[in-house]
Length: 295
Image (cartoon, rainbow, N blue to C red):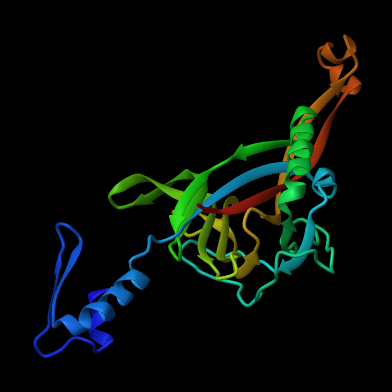
């Protein structure tokens, strides 16, 4: 504020301005004719910085359920390829879309695997209750689960970071011996909200999804490959509406044994009466972000 007053060039040669950091006060001494000018500037600048509450939900659902949630998918962002530890590849340039009813209703994602895409969708505040009911139903039937529901409050134009994941240990061998190191496998959301004069919220959004793949390693230390998806974008959304991020897939392979009761336990010949079943279950990670202006 002191610099703004100086830049306004209303301080006379006889004027004096200083800051008392202990009391966070500005001390101004000048001729009487300038007092009204100072009051106008201070009144305009001395306002509390608005805050934004960001509620996030990270949900894992089966592929078929994700298509039944009624999300209006309005944009699709291609993820970056996999990269080794320390690499950074970022997909940019999505632009903006407004949180109004959209003319395009795209699927949640193009498909699972490396060729999939990150979808960005929109849910109005009125439809949020219906989404809650659907997610609760998916949890009760085992077709989905809420991984976490973090909440954070940040000031206007200040960064908020939401992180969900774990550190995976791996061993490295050197002349000094064996050492355990860690690699991050996490979903990270970085949000910078800005409240517009119209009362909407412009969010600068950065999404990072890192997964360690120990089936592909590099070097003698067996450092795991990191599969990385990174997206940067800006989204204009109404206060209290919800942004949905989809297209982050996980594939879980399971092996089960199906045997004829009694006969499958016969020594030597039991294998004739049982078989192993390999099952691939694809689930999708959905992230819901709801910004609200703190009033």
